[in-house]
Length: 527
Ligand SMILES: NC(=O)c1ccc[n+]([C@@H]2O[C@H](COP(=O)([O-])OP(=O)(O)OC[C@H]3O[C@@H](n4cnc5c(N)ncnc54)[C@H](O)[C@@H]3O)[C@@H](O)[C@H]2O)c1
Ligand SMILES: O=C(O)CC[C@@H](O)C(=O)O
Image (cartoon, rainbow, N blue to C red; front, side):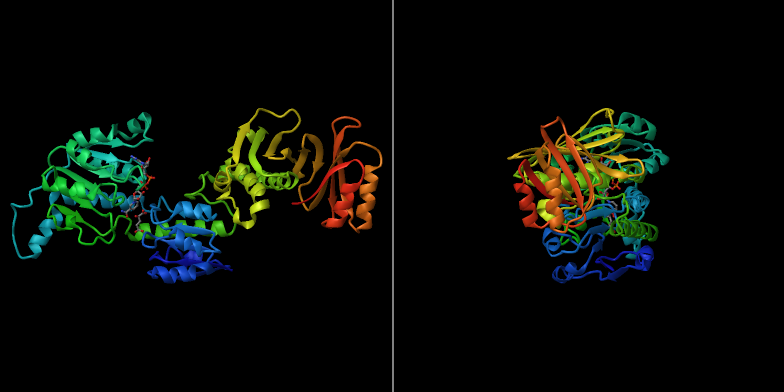
């Protein structure tokens, strides 16, 4: 039974499928104080949050069973992604479900800002009939500058163009073709500042975007410019915004998000030229159901080891790409496990080579499973698919990935080479039609072994009697040999023997095999 904790207010209608899953227990406990959450989190396999719960490194340190954190929404700045990655916890979000809701909210704010609707409403509510103080501006013919033309920025652009606005956009990933296709002009942030009548930001909050609209940018702006932030508090420097409102550069601002939420004594909220909502961009019935459905499905997929698509701390690959590489994942992990058990010494480099058909595919997931296979031999369950590259990097292990052309023998070819302070070892494998993954080379010697169960692998001199003596020692220890493979490069030179045995070999028998004249090394490998 998987235990899932929902620690923020997430639509129960959207979570229905998750709650109905037979092997899942969902506990809905929004608003838990951090200490209580920390005391409870150890019991749970997954945590579902919106933006209120702060998923800190400290909280994750107590989350010993946690496999996934699901964010019912886009922004993940309330989650310590690095700490989650280090602990092998997958973080998924629901990036599509609230796009329209947030774009519409931005547009509602833009219109309210242009026509002073909140101020006029407050005035009429107070009993006044003041028609002079709230003269607005039309949108038609005005210029809107959009910083961040992703999902929401794009939807805002479409709506602005429908209102007859000219749209300028800055986004580091905006190509000329895409800009032309959307009908926006791709410009720099400074150009937006110089030319726009309205400026709206739609980037995530990152190190790069924090305060990207600050004093120097306000200094470039047209007098009376109107500013909107329905993305994240902190993208616009609040102190600089206040100064620009006070000196008249900024004519008005519409804010849905704040550097501190909820805002405490924020002077911006005292200005009658600032209109504000309490982080309501995603707060529509539709968006809340959508994000809950999306994140609930992702969490179920993760817990049931099925492909998932919106991981924040894993490269996200379309489902069809994952399906295409799926058969190589087992081979990759087994190759990693095998090579780590035959290589002695301190690991410094891992070189993975893909040849043949597999080289034409997206191999990043396969490389991750190879790393997981290698590192888990020494680091156990601490290593998983999510944190394997991070652990390799922290350990100072150099990982390289190469793709070559067609292989001269095999249709698919994956080779893994480990360098340690005691030498270099390699193993290679392929997928045989109908037979699944096979190990076809060990340290350059050709073999053909199914990577499963216990294997006994020797390096020895190619001379008569060795195989017989090893067989006798195993027989005396009651170990049955299920299959045997010998590979050599030249008569009388060094050779490799791989024995598939029905049970693990005890230490004494292994030591005795190591004493057989001509045996250079022996290892038992569990796959
Ligand atoms: N107010 C709300 O309730 C609410 C709701 C949803 C999303 N959001 C916020 O809106 C943000 C955008 O959401 P989205 O779904 O459009 O995300 P998205 O990932 O589709 O778009 C973000 C865009 O920002 C661009 N970007 C990144 N760094 C940039 C930079 N330095 N300068 C300019 N552009 C940059 C990216 O290239 C991307 O195109 C989210 O990160 C979230 O913080 C707020
Ligand atoms: O959960 C919310 O309401 C806010 C969501 C929004 O900020 C997001 O980033 O998706």
